[in-house]
Image 1: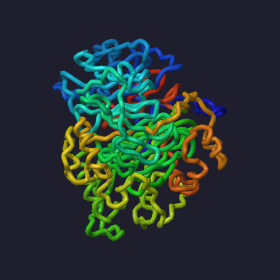
Image 2: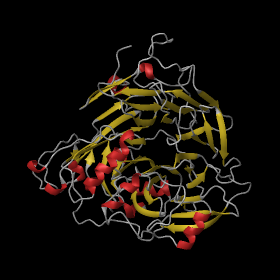
Image 3: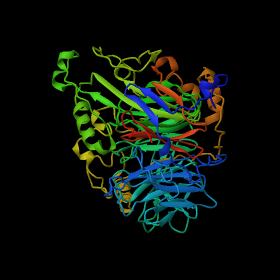
Length: 592
């Protein structure tokens, strides 16, 4: 899939790359795959996905990895950058002949999976697995048990599961999206019933609706969301679990207040469907990628596109923030004046293990009118062009109107025409009684201390918890076990979505002002693409800064499907079924 005529160097698979932090190196002996290490024939199969969990065992190596390849699902001890004793068959190599658990499915394929990090122990883990036929399985790969199968008879939804995640802070609630465009909230303690569910409207707004399940006894699903047109390709919870970002085949990013079932804001892709989405560690920014070959950065507070990144030559399949490289140099809120003397810099390193402290420190910064003088958000993307791109989002993009006395930018800004200072913020007023533009307090991940507390499975009658929802409806929802959580359900949609060939010819060079005609053919969305282009929903290319990647390297032979940032490495995977570990600078143990 590399560009033609690029010569040998263009098609060469990279085993290391250099950034300002140093050299990232591929650990060839820390590669995971099927035990025979033979490339998987990926024609017609679902994307390879990877999930991690730490079981906190006494050995000091509690990391576990799960990945799917075709009809198979594997669960291994993950060694990462650690060196393995030389007595193993391949010194330093992961022993693929001894998975903790291996499952081969017939008639369906795993499509996605997610561990419950709250309940994981050395003796037991809860793993949700979504399937191509629509079912969701709850398994324990340590005990080698299968606990439950949801949507077993496919009475709830018959389409492929596109994304499954545990609700943050919950031991029993999980959210599942489907290629039908519907999304469902389940409780592991409840059954799915023996008949097709009947629904009652709970909430609806512009291109979305949410229904509760009508039944005499509580059953799954607790909620059904219908969002936009076509498949709902992926969703992601904000760092504090209060907001939900969804990307769909209709090209729209939709961000919801998960608890209040309110639409917070939307964004339209430049071209085609959106395939992936992620949140910045502080919840202030969302990055989405898809069929326009771009990565698009969207501000949660301002509800607008603030930058696009162009580096991929085909569809972008995964975007992810690097919590460990993202940094903020803070100022004292009381002394902010824009000059060097008034700033006391402090580096904050984000990480999964330090999420709560990070949020509390960012809360102080965002609860004032001050802005950091120097900020760098690092995120990455991988695509069907087999390339890995790393990006830096810096303060010259985030705060274009502030005089910068000390700019540390590693981002090339092209056509950086900043948005008008008085630009109107678009929100969906048809359903938005509250939106995040009134106060920084609505930013996910930077709220007061209460947001870091574990979330209860029952809804307390607190002020604001049912904003925009009739008390009678919410009380009814609570009584049926919906609790504090509301999910996205999709608008009644046409069964018109077709699987598209992964290889495509469209690139940024082919996108022109006439692309609205193609958009009409591809998305069939109710929103006329010609009317969104040039608005805050979808600014023109020249109206927002265009980022160039720090690095853009071909790292695989087949399309890339995974990008995960860990503390001492980053992990990628391709459709051939190879999961690769790239050691961060200074983290390589020693040559094997």
